[in-house]
Image 1 (cartoon, rainbow, N blue to C red):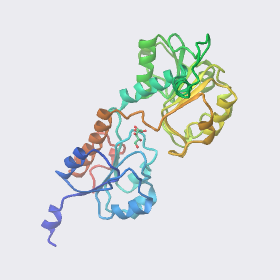
Image 2: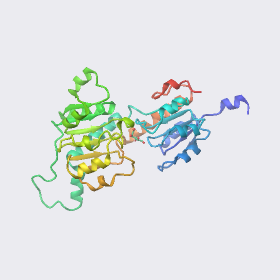
Image 3: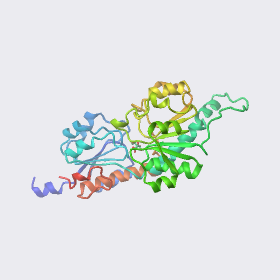
Image 4: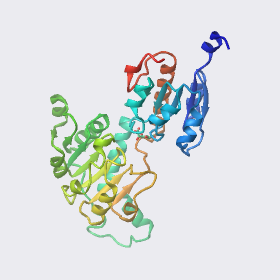
Length: 335
Ligand code: 8YV
C-alpha cells in the first residue's frame, strides 16, 4: 500500500452502544463506522476485539475504558463519551498514551436538574408510594394524615456538589419554590453567585444537619466513594429526604436501605445505584423510596444533543481539530 493510500484511509470509528440512527449517519459522512447496535453492553474482551484497528470510539457512561483496554487497542486516538460523568474512563491512562477523551457537559444540565427536582418532589410528597396504594385498591376513605409528606416550598434545600447541575437545581428551588439554600462543594462559589442564590456554604456535617431535602450531585471517584454512609445519614433530620442523581457508589446503598427501613430519614429518591442495573434488595423492600432507572438526562431532545456532542468531539478529534469538550486537551494535536 502506498503512503498516499494510507493517508487517504478514512478514520475508523466504533459506536459501542445503540444510539440515534441520524447520529450514526452523521458519523458515516466522515468515518468508516461500525456499531454495536443493541442496548446489551459489550464485555471488555468483546469491546477490545471490536476496537482493533479503530481510531475512535463513541461510548456512554457505562463502558469501562481503562489502562488495560487502552494498551490492548494501540490504534485508538479518541474516546468520546455522551455522558457528563466520566468515572468509567481512566483519563490519566488515556493521556499517558496520547488518547484524547471527551465528555458531554452542559447539554444535559437543565434536563437533569428538572429530573432531580421532580425526584425531590415525588419523594417529599410520596407520589409513587401513593400511586401504589391506589393501584393496590387500598384507597377506601379520606384520611386527615393519609400519605401526608413534607413541603418543598419554604424548606431548606441542601446541595452536595455545586457544579452546573447542582446550581441549576438550586435556581429552581430558590427562585421557583422560595427554598433556603445550603451547600457543600470542593470549592466555594464566587461571592456574587452565593449572593444571587442566597446560598450558605457549610461543611459536610453542617449540610447534613441543616437540609430538609438533600440533593447529591457530586462526581463519583475514590474521594466520593460512600461519601454518604451510616454515620452521615445519622446526622440528617428524621424528617429529611435524600435524593441521588449523581452516581451509585457515592451513597452506601445498604446503609441507606437500613436508615429508610428504620425511618431514620423520611424518604429517598434514587436514580443511580451501586452496581446498577442491580438494585440493593433492601431498597426494593421499603415503601419510602422513589426508584428510577438512571434516567435523569432522558428527555429525547437532550439525549440527542448528548449524542451529537459526542459525535462532534469525535469528528473534531479525528480531523485535526480540538474536540469542543476535551477533558485532556494537553494531548493535542493527536498522533
Ligand atoms: C447518562 C449520566 O445517561 O451523563 C451522565 O453522566 O449519568 C447520564 O446522563 C449515562 O451516563 C449514559 O450512560
